[in-house]
Image (cartoon, rainbow, N blue to C red; front, side):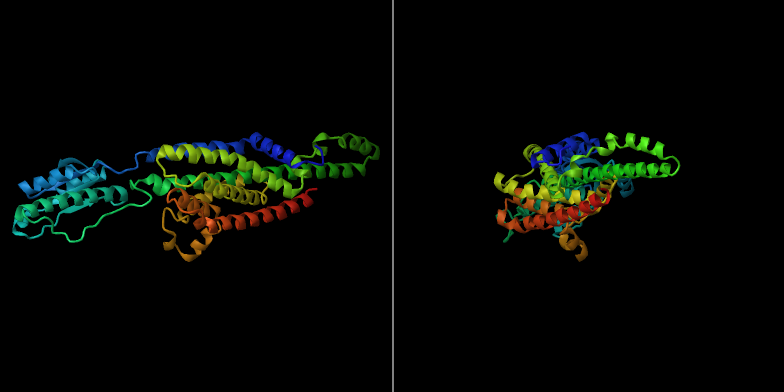
Length: 415
C-alpha cells in the first residue's frame, strides 16, 4: 500500500475494514437493528388497562353490589369473579390467574347510611408496580363515584362539597406509558453501547493483526539467526526466500497512516453509519412507537453528531488497550446493566450515592440521554442542553488523546 495516504483514502479503507469485519457488522448494524426492533415489542401496549380483579363481598348489600359494578366499569379493571375467602384469592394471585382482590367488609352499607366510614381494602402484588397502581387508581375512582352518589342522595340541592379540586396534568408523557418514560432513553443507550463496542472491536482487531505480524517477523529472524550458527550457506538461501515473504512486507493502511488521521477517519466513518441508524431510530421507530419528537432537525443533529463522535472516540480508546477483539464486547456487556441504573431514567439520579452521580457525568450516554430527552420529549431550547454538549467535547477530546498516545506506543513497539 502507498505510504502517502490521503484522508479520503483512509476513510474509504475504514469503511472497507468495518464492512469486512463480521463481528463489527454483527454488533454495529445487526445488533442495533435487532435491539431497536425487538426491545420495544413487549411495550407496544404500554398503557396498563383491564387488570384482573377478584372480589370478596362480605356485606352482600345493594351498596356493595353498586361499588362492584362501578369498579368493573373503570378502564383499569376487568372483574373476574367473586370468591368466598382471602385464601382463595391469594391462591389465584399466586398462580398469576388474578392481579388483585377487593375486600368489602361486613356492615359496609349500614355504616355508609349512618355516615360512619368503612374501610374497603385492596390487596395485590406490588412487585408489578404498574399493575398495582392501575388497580388502585380504578378502585379509587369507583369509590369516589359511589361517594358522590351517596352525597347527592343525602343533599340533592348541594352542588358540590369540594372547595378546591385537584387536576392532574402529566407533562411530557400524556398517556403515562412506558414508551416516553424509559423506552426512548433505552434506545439511545443501545446506540451508545453498540457504537463503543463496534469501534473498540475494530481497534482491538487491528492491534492483533499488527502484533501477530511483528511476532512472525521476529520469529523469522530468530530462526534465521539460530540456523546461521550451524550452516551459513543454508541460512543465506533461507533468508533470500523468506525476505520476499509478502505477508511480512505488506503494510496495512492502519500501519502507515498518521495516527491522528487514522483516528479522525475512524470517527467520521462510524459517524456516517450511525447517522443512518439515528435516522432509523428517531425517524422511523420513534414515530411508530408513539414517542414524542419535539426538537427541530437542526437542534437534533447539532446535538447528535457530537454525541456519536464522543461515543466512537471512547470505543477507539477502549479498543486501543487490547489485542483481542472479543474483550471490548465483554466490557460493554458486563457494564451495560450497572450503567443503565446510573443513567437517571430508571432511578432518579438525585437518589443515587454521590460517587455514582459523579461517575455518570463521565459517561457519554448520560449526557446523550439527558440532552435528547430534553430536546425530544420536553421540547427544551437548545441552550438548556449546552453543558451536555460541552461534556461531549471534553470526554471525546480526552479519549481521542488517550487513543493517540496508546496507539503511538503500540506502533513504536511493534515496528
